[in-house]
Amino acid sequence: MAASTQHRARRYQTYGNVAYQAEPVPVPNHRTAQRTGREAERVRRPRVQPRTRTITRPQVEVRPQGAVSPFAIVGILAVAVCALMLVMTSAQLAMVNDETVDLRASLSELQAEEKTLQTQYELAFDLSEIEKQLTADGSMVKAGPGQTVYLDLSEGDSVVYYHAAQEGIAGLIRQAEEFLSGILS
Image (cartoon, rainbow, N blue to C red; front, side, top):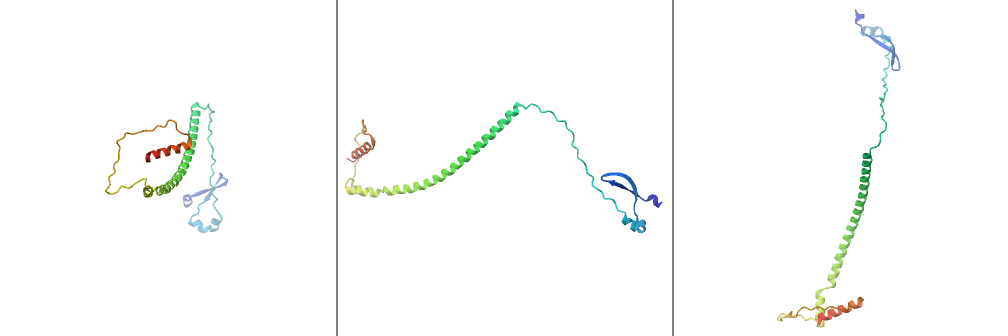
């Protein structure tokens, strides 16, 4: 009865991954292991090699190439034109940005120069110096605290129109002299 309940395993002799012949292998239990200790050492289990699966690709029927749609050609051309315009506008934007940086730098330099020139101009035309010069030669007299000065505006406005203007810088200088002499006299 013990022999009938004993499980028997099968050992296969293999070459590669295909089994050829099945042989029963006795399963050792605690009784047989004591008797046949040497035999159990000699009997080794065969190495189990991993199964390799071959991959087969499904056979797909390829349809023949059809004609290219005119809408596809127009679409590809539109995308190419848009990409070209994008590249051109980004290049122009980079150039404008570079020019802006240069102009800002020159603006700050010009503002600094304006401040120095404004200061020089204000120092060149000092009103107190001009007043001293005009009062020294007698062309202008400063009114005293008790004096009353009247301005006569009773005459009408007058316009002088020059029919034959003189040419060049010399004519311009003569006209300026005449204008100043008319004001001062």
